[in-house]
Length: 440
Image (cartoon, rainbow, N blue to C red):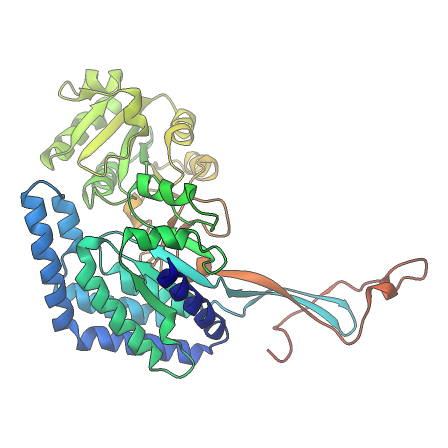
């Protein structure tokens, strides 16, 4: 506990320095991080191969899954992609110090609401070691220190990446090496959860039980999602060929992803034509269908669905299917059973699409597009620290904009509130201003 508290206090001190670091210094640090990844890619691959060998033995013994091994394993192209993502973050505008609101209260008394870093981020992520440079680069560009915890199966990969990124960033004047730190055990995470005086935000990425555990065992605000129960709704006026492509991609492109669909909703008017074709194509990819009574009547090979299926995040080649009478019924199903993550409608009817886009209560809602687009890199955010279904300051894929908050700056010239109170009160001008705070 003492060691982790010391680490967190060093991160807090680093965050106060990093908060005022100029954009040029942060971008220079990110460039050095990208170069370090490229220059040490052989060592990174060697460390990753060590992790992969150990995990492969566990997969063979039935103690870990093959998809986990797939997410863990790096190639040279993936390592070079890490460097590319770090540079893509460097190319983004600096989110810190932007004036979102500017108001003259009186002559010489000006109020600004500006963006500022959150402080110290505790980021816990799954087996993918490429998540580490993504998270570290986003936090640094947004002026936040970060304490990282990766999966134990990627321990050697993560340890090397954290060491070389911290050293690369710390070599730039004005960027503390302690801005990027790594913990490695579950006990370390448990210790972090008690440090609400040092850590300002926890971002867990992993299984729903783990995320819920984090949410329920800390006073630190938690950003993220526990479930990814995503839906595709194929409307009566859908282009069926387009719908087949979108449903297939949303389910099979990467079924273990949190933005892969788990339930397919189909309008009754087109179900007799669409569902048999969808069953053939999905079945060819090994997808098991679990359907309502009307689905089973149209696709006899389909397993009857239970109430639990509508609430299930399979993260596998399993898809629940339900026939609905209207878009309104589809929306009601999603808002009842969904996890507020990502949902899509396929339709050529603009009015129906707008009804869906407005009324589905999710962090990403789509029209004629695969749910797999719900991703920070694909959204043009450079990368993402995670996907949030919270109704707080950040929702959906969280990039740089979700890693800053705001503070008010009031610039005066000797004013006192007494002047603006009482029978002879001086009136406020409350005149909107343009531009940034003077001198900042």
